[in-house]
Length: 363
Image 1 (tube, one colour):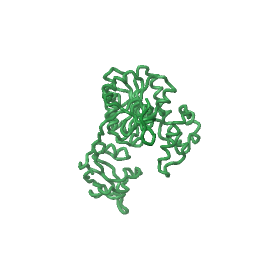
Image 2 (cartoon, helix red, strand yellow; image 1 turned 135 degrees about the horizontal axis):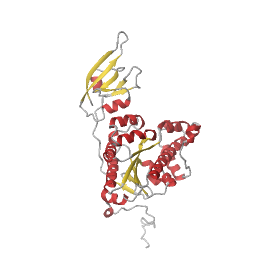
Image 3 (cartoon, one colour; image 1 turned 60 degrees about the horizontal axis):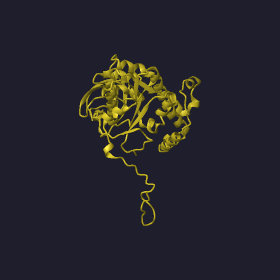
Image 4 (cartoon, one colour; image 1 turned 90 degrees about the horizontal axis):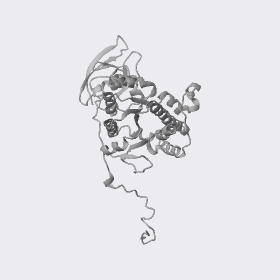
């Protein structure tokens, strides 16, 4: 076909890069599950703070179970040394709070746990294995600071095999790196090594699980950056193990490029309910116990209740407070405008410390 040209002789049609998505071909989650049922590995990339992404991850797991698949869940959010805590939680041996304490979730991941609660509770209800995919942050932090060369011989010996040959992956990470604030950039080679270590470590753990459980369908839950273009975990898993796999990403704000993912999801936005806050900035755990207040939010219920900078929080609604995790757990499901009883210790220059009990209205 020879297209007509515009007055200046150029063509708006020839070489036009516009992609066309026919609405009649849009399907739903039920149709998606049918397409996924014969895969061994399903990568469901997420934006960590999007609740709708996590609800869709739970929906996919639920759908695979309904199809009679033997499902396991691989999660970036948990680090490999804490696998036993996940096993105990799924088996019903420990509760949610103990899971979060034993995995050091609030120190090692920090995103609102309620985002992942539907997935973890589904796993517990159906005894679905949950696999801690990530390497421990002590290792990756050291690599970020000084590169793999800075690791001890013992640590280097236990690293996964790392493939550095993907030039497109390197270029994509370099573009991401350049968007970081200058004071956070550091050394790009160290940044690259951390990303490679994350992806290779998770791929190696996934491959080991699949090799040991030949009937399992593994749903991998990880940030979209570890999934898109297949360059992160998928390609590195495929190098270790040849199994049918597919990738899914939230399509909002993305060009529907088939090179990016196999499926794009377009969920409605879903917000978690707001949680109540004390309105305090806390320091490191005090040697004498408790968490010291270092400052207050502009609208602080704690300040209104009479607490001061330097006071040490020791209990919230009967929950002993010895760490950041204790505060997060005590307020995990607290609602704004709700009230909590807080016990604090105020040091005195002269005389013994004063123990305070106040009721705080959460903001």
